[in-house]
Image 1 (tube, rainbow, N blue to C red):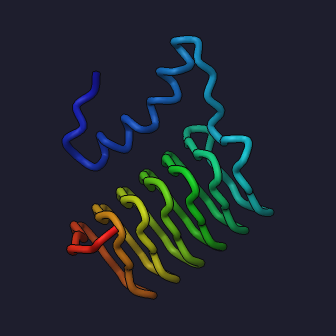
Image 2 (image 1 turned 90 degrees about the horizontal axis):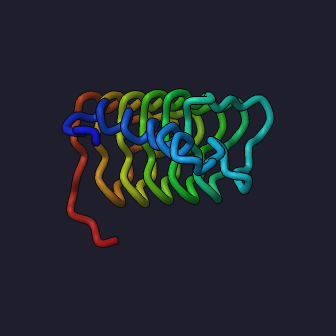
Length: 140
């Protein structure tokens, strides 16, 4: 049982799921076999990447959880973050300490630090977001 009342504790709980399953005898690979990983990309051993996700070239993912069917462009850095299902992260983005909800699109060269991004959001190209909760009314 974990209390997840902060972004960092929520992210940590998501990372610990793999360890919890391992202790119960259920093997879960940190990279699902269907994940498409391009050249020179790195996914840390403490990450979990779900099925159907595509990861571009020269991507670095550390201490993060990536949901199903996400698309991550080239030259992206994701650190200590959680991306829920069907998130698109375009080329050159930098995401740190954030939670990105389902069906959101992070356009090129966005910098996101310590943010909560609601479902279906579209973040502007070259946008800089820090310590924000980004939630607008959107039909999903």
